[in-house]
Length: 331
Ligand SMILES: [Zn+2]
Image 1 (cartoon, rainbow, N blue to C red):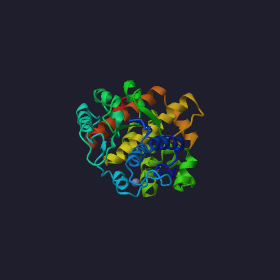
Image 2: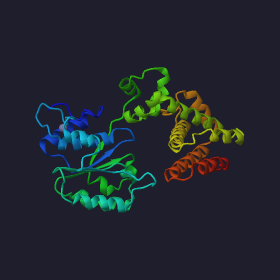
Image 3: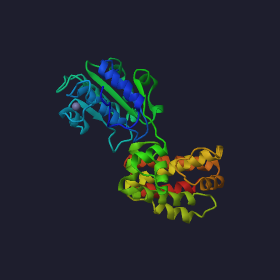
């Protein structure tokens, strides 16, 4: 067999196992693919879809070939029999209605291929009702139908779904692997690589624009971190919060970074040598952790998490930012 799933970096064992199953015709019909955002879940799902539909078959050709008409259209999401359900941007969850509609489609006849793939990219955002609506079809999918659930957090997936799907965990990479993959080996690149959380896709995104966006987001979140110590006057926190990005996507990115930083600080409280994801300087993390109680850190973490949730629901950015400061002040 030629090279398997070459669009996906790493994940050697998974590739080998799935490649053999595709060639042998023993590929399971329902998958749960887990890993954080940017870990390659959708890339893998598309590679499997393309391999199942690739027009060039032969023991020496790569699987998929990435060159035939089917492969190209699957990569561009223009192939009628590979369907993708995503969480609507203005909603926090995927509801039962969307899933039922998707499920109904599985029983219609194929338009171009006898292998039809249904991908749900934010499977962990499905409500329990929506997940239940999938149970039967996952257990007995219509002929030629493959279902792939992509999940960033398996805690939100029902056990009944987990037990009926083949589980694939995406590989995480250490900083050195990410650095050499991206050709980013400078000292200045280290803090960005840490924020990538072991994910190639995230790392690429962080370095798009030369990494300047991410560095700017880090500067604003650093300022907030310095100002949340109880000894610092509220006016400083107010100023730091006002400096946060005003564009929603950038604001969410900065707040997500803050939650990662707070998670570091909470870990530091228990274990001084815990691996850190946000702080490159362990001393600074230690100093911040020592300045706050675990209770305070937890409460601030919750406020920021719920602020991110509100922003996802399309709440007015200015209103959210104003209440963020007020809510932290009350802690
Ligand atoms: Zn092909």
